[in-house]
Length: 290
Image (cartoon, rainbow, N blue to C red; front, side, top):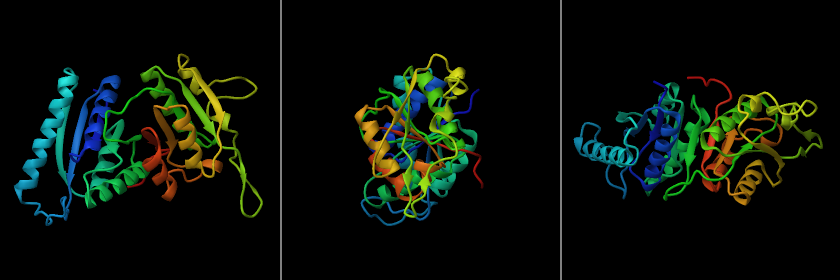
């Protein structure tokens, strides 16, 4: 069977949205759905209860019940979808990163349960988005997240953005929607030099003189177009553009050049995860180190 779709789950409303989002992805891809929760030590449970003992079965039993309910909800909607749940111990970021080695997609919510748990989960989303071994989709919002709308790719001509474009075309084929390749114009650095990539942005898809080929040839039924976007930063440009066209998914590479340099590092990744008007897919450009 194909590699599974893995969802990180903590029982929050956003996590439940991530589970249903992951279920739709698993259904499209014809694979299993794995719902995973990681019990860390120590953990502060909302609203600011004492840390639990990892040998205490109270929190463990409660989470097993929440996992079972999440799996039941999914199977009520997708009767033929194979669903398994896992309760694991360790650091959430590290455990989910390891799970991504054998997954085709990892789905997480951008925020978890309230209080300190929410802050921890937010950092986990950023951590796994930057270091997972498979594409990661960070789901925003507490309500049912729609898949409608075109797929926007932040591209700069680098090998990382080409990998992101490949993932976007494959995703568009599953959803029967179009791809929009968004490119930010080159800007001057503080030293006056032009900040740009070694390849033009259209190199992620084809050649300007020979027409679209390569990625688009592999997905001839997927429509695509290119757009030049502008903003004070790469994140601002992508967020504004995605909102304007009601994007269903924003796809970026885990590393970039030129206008989208360091796309998932520091404040830029946080801006996309916290403020994008749609789910964000981060695609690793190369196998990550242990």
